[in-house]
Length: 369
Image 1 (cartoon, rainbow, N blue to C red):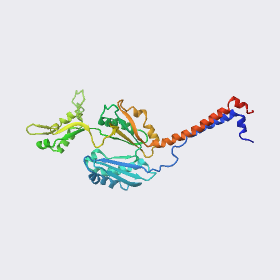
Image 2 (cartoon, helix red, strand yellow; image 1 turned 90 degrees about the vertical axis):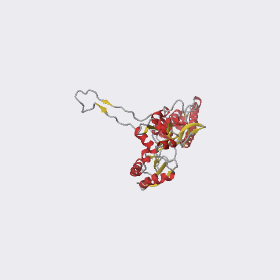
Image 3 (spheres, rainbow, N blue to C red; image 1 turned 180 degrees about the horizontal axis):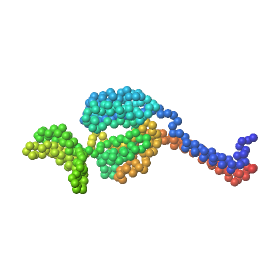
Image 4 (cartoon, one colour; image 1 turned 45 degrees about the vertical axis):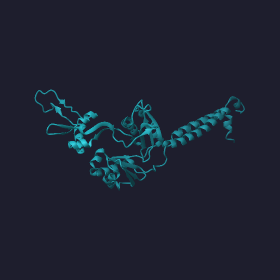
């Protein structure tokens, strides 16, 4: 018996079977798992710290040696590598065995770092030591810039840090989002000649700024226990942290015996500038802010790249700022997927056209029923 005879004799029946097979293929395509194999990339945990004004050798001796001494030997660790720079930055990458839970590895490293924190310099403890679990290689990056040149690099970088970076960091699969560029900070440029003439040191300025730029609780008036008949209870609101350069300039550094007052503006110049001028980002000669995204160890690169274009993230952009991607690793994986999609669409289209041709009225009459 010829297997094709029933289908030739009944072309409509053959068309129905073909449609059912196509639908089954589409349903099966949607159910294909993303990954059939276990995670083979070893998870990594990164520890970062900063020590303003320190050199690479000072960072290695006073920060790196203390942290590495405690982190060494953490559970399931394979090896670790560290780097120190002359701008006061320190980075330690701890690599664990494949199959280790990244969350458990991060907690173990965090506990080890907490043991070394009391021995670190005070400036390092104040800025904080961060422990994060992320991939060591950059997933993608994009630049935020002002096409009309109405915003400077400090404004763009600060806006990207406050708004865009937080929106990107909340996306599923993102391990870390960093911004390369300066952010706003109140800078105090000390005048050595004036400080020497007035007998003021840098420690005096630091103590005055820390003491008078603080948010303190002023208490309450009329709180219990209160005299009989007291009907009002008021909360005292005092001036908190200083807001602009003028208020910082009015900070009292010292009061002399004759009543003369030495203020911060008398021995230094106060301005709102960049926190650090070590990093600069430009795009085609225009000031910009570079946002770099790292994926978490168990995340899908294509899913993270697609989530980056969500409307929630786009809503954080200013109308005067644009975004341009400059590096995207998932693009190399997406191109083969597009080629595969075109390859199976072409036979499908050819099969449909052939079936339509043989199912026409003139052709159907040539086949006996």
